[in-house]
Length: 121
Length: 329
Ligand SMILES: Cc1cc2nc3c(=O)[nH]c(=O)nc-3n(C[C@H](O)[C@H](O)[C@H](O)COP(=O)(O)OP(=O)(O)OC[C@H]3O[C@@H](n4cnc5c(N)ncnc54)[C@H](O)[C@@H]3O)c2cc1C
Ligand code: HEM
Ligand code: FES
Image (cartoon, each protein chain N blue to C red):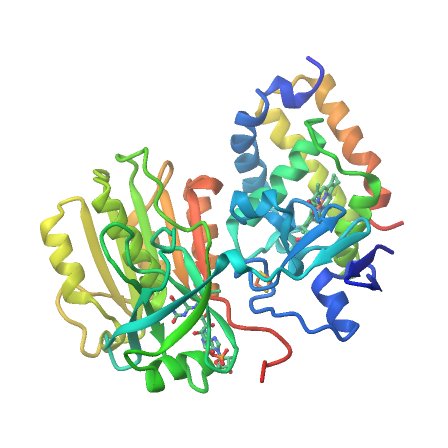
């Protein structure tokens, strides 16, 4: 197994993972307001982009994309506490998906590596 | 900072700025309406560079393949060469063949089209008003069943396009339209899947189309339609929907009114959101359609998701108001 993405079953399994992750995010008072899009379909696309990246699935995001993609959120106060909350929800989701511990650590490291770009530092 | 090339000019995009905001800041007039990635009025085409997947979310595949994107939700990570599409392939013209008042504030317009439009009930067209304003209206008619395109338009105080539709529009008038757009429609293949539909005001327009489409395609699972209004006289199509419910045992129609005055038998009284949640309980495995008032749509989306519906099974059309800064002359 080279990635969580493959471990959980690739693209077809992502929809269930996205539902699970988004349920956590929506019930998390610390961050749910950042995900208040007018349209669920757009919301799903965002969550999926996030998870695919964190799970090491096919994506072509760069650090620069993360920087630009979150700049308008940083301008509205996005900070470390929000980042930590997202990482926690990610961890919880992977545990529920029965992802092996070593792969979970890997995914959290991937997420962590984007911290400075996401927070615009 | 990424640069945007339009024609022979280069525009520098600020941090976190969208392509639409950047061009407007530089004085370029771009048509826009919802500014939330829904109505597709601000469509552009990328000639070079990648506008990103979020800016293409919801566009039909043929448009995505041609690198169309919505400039109001595109925050470019790299330089982009863009063109304002003539949207020639999306532009059609129709003639009003019927105008009927459905209640004291809602008018139904039926159009005969110059060329056939390939659409699904529940999608929407961007109608260009007589003064050039662009507004989205949902398709009520069902292709293959109806020969016309049908819209239900709610008169808003001071409404530029709804005012025209209600007051001036007359049989024989012609309108230009762009579309169809949108992904809120019935997809066959799971005829037994339970369906929940809810909306207020002319949010019924797409929902009515979707229900008729589902029934005409032989949907067998339960279909629960909730239509809400402030008072009974603001509901519409009550008799038609009751008749449909009488002939289709799997179709259930629940009219909901906020104020009890004038409420007829069978109408639920109270907040439509509460009524839906109290009556439905869990909706795991259901397909959910929500249309109309943006706040209601947003709240019900979340509530239905929490009640078990999958993200991909929740389809919604928020009737977002026009938010373009410049009113076209
Ligand atoms: C995807 C989509 C589908 C739509 N489908 C339909 C449809 O099927 N039927 C339909 O009637 N409308 C529909 N709408 C709304 C429609 O596009 C217009 O926004 C609406 O008709 C008002 O346009 P107007 O030119 O009459 O008003 P405007 O001239 O744009 O606005 C007049 C005044 O009304 C206010 N206003 C605007 N919207 C609202 C509102 N919802 N409630 C209260 N005040 C408001 C404005 O702020 C302004 O002060 C849809 C919108 C979207 C995005
Ligand atoms: C763990 C680090 C993170 C990664 C890897 C990440 C990844 C992504 C990706 C891939 C996108 C889609 C971008 C696009 O396609 O345009 C995105 C968008 C978004 N992210 Fe993150 N993200 C992270 C942290 C956060 C945090 C902490 C928040 C807020 C609490 C957040 C909120 C958002 C929002 C609101 C969007 C949508 C932006 C828009 O609508 O334009 N992200 N993110
Ligand atoms: S989609 Fe951009 S203005 Fe509506």
